[in-house]
Amino acid sequence: MSRHEEPRITDPQRLRALAHPLRAELLDVLRIEGQATATRCAELTGESVASCSFHLRMLAKYGYIEPAEQQGREKPWRLAIHSFTATADFEDQASIYALREVATLAIDQAAQRVREWLARGPEEPLEWIQASTISTSVFWATAEELAEVSQALSELTDRFKARNADPSLRPAGARVARLLGAITVDPERPDSSHGDHGDQGASS
Image (cartoon, rainbow, N blue to C red; front, side, top):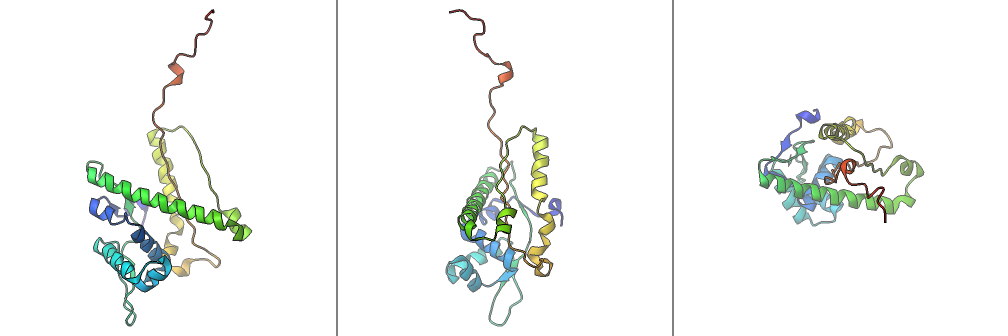
């Protein structure tokens, strides 16, 4: 499925269902594990089984996950949609505010993972340290050009997506990697090309 074909989530209630730290973690667990029970989710998140079970049901209520094939007494869950785009209906204030909540949580959690990576860096093999990166850039662009950059950034990891759902596609030695991407725009600034450059030639 191309990014243009991904389900687009704009409904405020469905968006707000994502704006909860544990639910975001649970979705992360299912992306990586393929499927997991509430007990397994509790082991990986450090939360109680009851709490994980409740929030898994909430994610299922809003269509993000679904029951997987039951294995004995175990009741695992899996993703109902492996990839989607959370965005806003920009004519609906509730949708805009809900998206802001989701985005803020995503940034906070991603930044925390970056800090954790930096903290354990000295313990990691050199090849993984050298393969990772933190990069920033400042540039001038039109809205159209910025949209192209955003699209290119979104597509950077598309070729790896199938590996989330199918472990057999993961090469030997592969590890879970994460990309944090954010493109922002500064406030408008005064145009220095037409401003007063000082009292040139003034006498005292």
